[in-house]
Picture 1 (cartoon, rainbow, N blue to C red):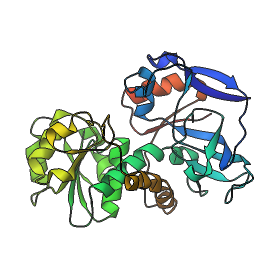
Picture 2 (cartoon, rainbow, N blue to C red):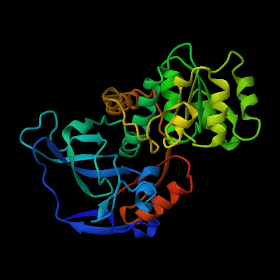
Picture 3 (tube, helix red, strand yellow):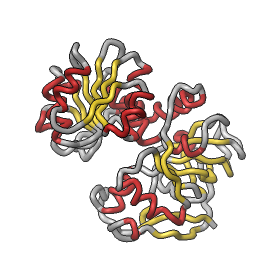
Length: 313
């Protein structure tokens, strides 16, 4: 039997329930993964609460999209994976579980130097950051402003941009400045006077901005500093981004991602696994929770705990 976390009603973290179901078997093009770590993302809690429900709840719903583990079974038509292989995977519903069937196309080999917890932290935040920066055409010569640079998406955006040759300014609370500096960005405190602090930190100007905070301050500061509205984007304020004349990648946006943008989100997983293995990328580990304590994991992500939270079955 397989243990899973699911919910049958929207609500606070206490609606999450640990259940047992028959262990699934992989179908064509799939592998069965014994989960060693599942990434906990803010969207998981938003879906559970009903804030981003994705439709009516007419049957129990599983939780989680990102994970890592070891291959336990392989469909006959799948090449490139064998039982016992360590893997990371993305875009697969129900990762809060002990075993999970995964489309082989969504999985990549995981080198020994990349821990399961780190690999489980890649999928959604890395895909979001990588795609957003590719869409914004960030590269050498740019000065990028990242709002909420110490968050999961923000940290990954900072690192990709630095690797691609951009100068990065990142907003954060002062207690998180050291982490932002370690990633290669110049930290600035959010709050009153943010625009001037960014101008002081970037005397030659800001060419591109990514909002991962969702605050009015982040939007207004970006509009004041970046001349080209096509190079300002939010991943949080999708519902009203068009009112500001800026781009939105998710965050409730009615505009779907283009095919190339979906491909970039998928590409982020193997790229980031390789960077981690080479020691050229860092994922800040937050608290880990047992599968039975998934409600505590959601309370932690909703409270803004530092680092990438993981569930370890």
